[in-house]
Length: 498
Image (tube, rainbow, N blue to C red; front, side, top):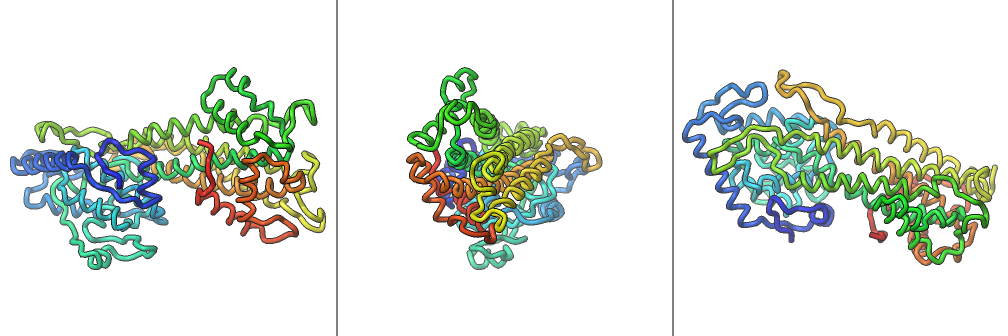
């Protein structure tokens, strides 16, 4: 059970809640802040003060004052009109993260919603009812309006949800669970949709998968190094200390541990003086990726504990401030950084695949085929890896440098952060498949060298991976092997050297 406070959520807890479906509870102190903030909104309405989003229109309509009797209708209209997202829905794990992060933000007590709102969001998490939220349609400022509107629809008893593996109407699930639709009141609709929780949720899930992929790439690369009788001098600590990057030093240290005791690796001068960059420069390249991942993690852990809606309520309602915390630029840039960084893991992996299958670059059977010429072996697997790497080059184009004005030019600079987060996630899926291909090729190659000569750690990995994909004894439909290996890596069952 994880207690939410609004300000103390970390990525490890998000992993437990979103992937492991751990339940949550709400901090009593945070609920008190929510109640105080709500009383402030009710006073504003009673005193007929004109405050954006409480009794005014939105965006270009911010100067239109709404009569007191229509304030609640304003919020319902806001959600329905903004729920115009399109495309495939976010995965359930991302939808779950979105609910979690919106709830955590509201618990800070700056948003003016009633306790029933935060309690319902908590119920959705604990009952594993996940709003069906289309992926496309957010500009990333004013926050993730369209995606979060689909989330808010569910609180109103409308829209659709994913529950127990089925897509159902919210109304049907509410009847089964004994839940009543919520009629949104002053400020609540705006508080639910004016934030960065779609890009942050997608970003967190992407980061968690990216970190797993980065660790797994080291095990697979270590097996490739043994397959190619790589030179371990390149991982000597003196080299990496001389440069000084913490992450590079750590990657080299993990490779020394992975390869310790191997009878397949070599020293400089035994077979060759230097290896190709795709082997020799792994600490430098992977280390740079880890630098980016560490930066992104820092930004995400700030964002998931941030108040990102507008306006924000301070001093028991004496001060209500309109600002721009909904602008997703910090996350947009972080997501673009992450997708470039993780794409490089795939890029260098594909080059190692080439070294495993190209007979001009090794002394292994051409394309690892058991009958070269009659059978093509792993030849086209390298094509697939190259195709995925090339696709990633397109996906890695920064979304954050783009902006299109909206709402009658009132909202004249936007972040495109959700596009950046979605593309980062797509890059990670492609990289995992590239690594699956490298893994299949390395498993095959090392059998020609002698699996009994593997290091103790890579020997364990070899045995586990061979349970997923058997040796190549003849040509077969390799797409099935690639998908099986990809699924195994995605399941994250293999240990890492953290």
